[in-house]
Image (cartoon, rainbow, N blue to C red; front, side, top):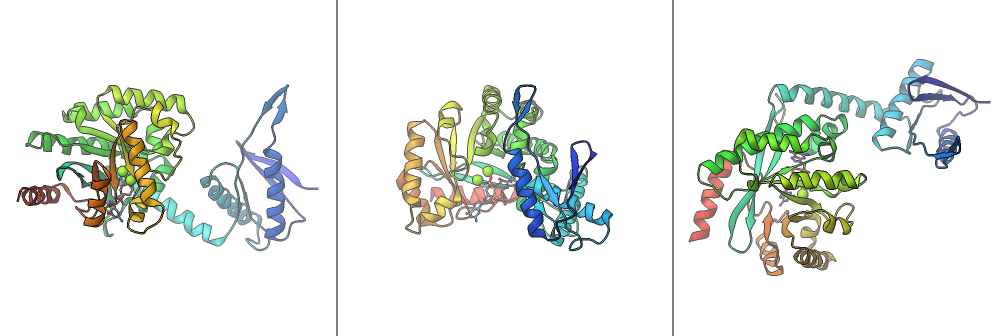
Length: 360
Ligand code: C2E
Ligand code: MG
Ligand code: MG
């Protein structure tokens, strides 16, 4: 007794005249979702289809059809953000979130042209000899009339809208330009670490972009390191292996960022030729708290040694954590204990002071 129709492209609408409460709609959504977990038999072939559902209820969410459909569409958008296989029933907060998303996305579009992004650099310290071995480039967004935006405010929107790809290309070029400047002006061992988002990794243009950034800046490839997260390796593994191999062939190094928080499939550590593991801050925080973290950190360090991977601890906030990690055999450290991410000139001043203090 329900009506199903095709709205456009791959969008369909189902009208449920008997459903008068969100609970009833949720039950219907669950029924449809369950149907789609089974394969469809098409000309003797078993095909799986993914779907997302957004729903709105009359009269709770709108009194006329047009607004009811628009609200269902808003709910669909939220459900798609959660990934395939989800459903969402409309809630007025969704409109606020949608508006925030759209306004950030539109502002990000112009931010690139207007050069509103900048990079700050956080030093990475060799624990054995207290040397500044490199920096990690971290993006900031100087939006006119607003306080400086941190990545947490906009990276997710950039990723979702695809804008992370051109933004990431800008980051690569800017970071290489700055590193080449440091290299030319006497910091010969500088290593610039650049974060790469999953979408950027899968874009198909990453290898070309990295090669161009190295070429344009004149930075020796060994001075560049890309930080990938475990999630970039999920899914299309064969493609990922090729991309990793091509990147390595450029002569740069690769690290796994936030190690331990994601997929943590140890098999890939052998299959991919990474150079470094960055142990996530959450484990480092736990070092001082007598939880399981010390055992985990110790195990990660041991495994890394066996696999010939260097190690960096993220988020060191005090001297006792630093000395503990040194004793545990961790190679490098990064965190507020040494310095926060700084604009290039401030990093120069910080480094000078740090090296001076290390020699006395
Ligand atoms: P990440 O790559 O794991 O970077 C480390 C983050 O931890 C940075 O946050 C840094 O400021 C923060 N951090 C470092 N030491 C400490 C510490 O001792 N205590 C605490 N509480 N935090 C510390 P930030 O700059 O906000 O960046 C957040 C995330 O945004 C980064 O995590 C990275 O995943 C992403 N990101 C930053 N820049 C870029 C970029 O250019 N491209 C992409 N794709 N992602 C970026
Ligand atoms: Mg990183
Ligand atoms: Mg990290």
